[in-house]
Length: 202
Image (cartoon, rainbow, N blue to C red):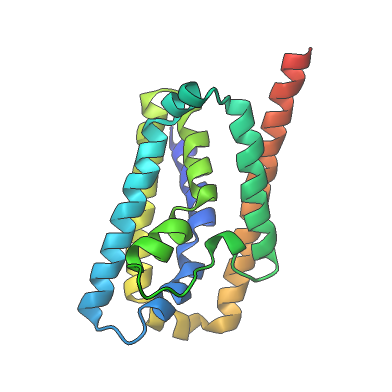
């Protein structure tokens, strides 16, 4: 149980990457007072939590509704997660997590909640972990993501101080490390998908 919880947490941590996303939050909320920054962070994280929770709970239902198999999710999700990790290995934010400047849209909803915090890779990861078993796996998946949301909130609120401490070079190192972990997770998902296909063929 503990090993599964740690695996889920690390998977979410790598793909959500609160440390690397902290400068994004700081840049988006630049010029805002502390209370406004807190409101934006809370709103974005609550929305992200509910998005991931819905996909974690209704993953199997969504599969049945659209005729999607777990093998297809592993292959597609593995590709998405691997691409994000590969881009991060170069010290860059993934194109899937980049934001567009749009003053007409609440930044807590877009781009913070979607796609930065709960993008396609995060959703695919949540569905992959929760669909492996029953309600226990779903509970672990949602709980670990909830803990990560709290950690992300702390990173966001103390983001400027944190960035000043480790510097831009430190942020790039963290991004590359998270990218390596994500690439491995993506490769693992792809391997599991290919194994399932081979079993079907046999």
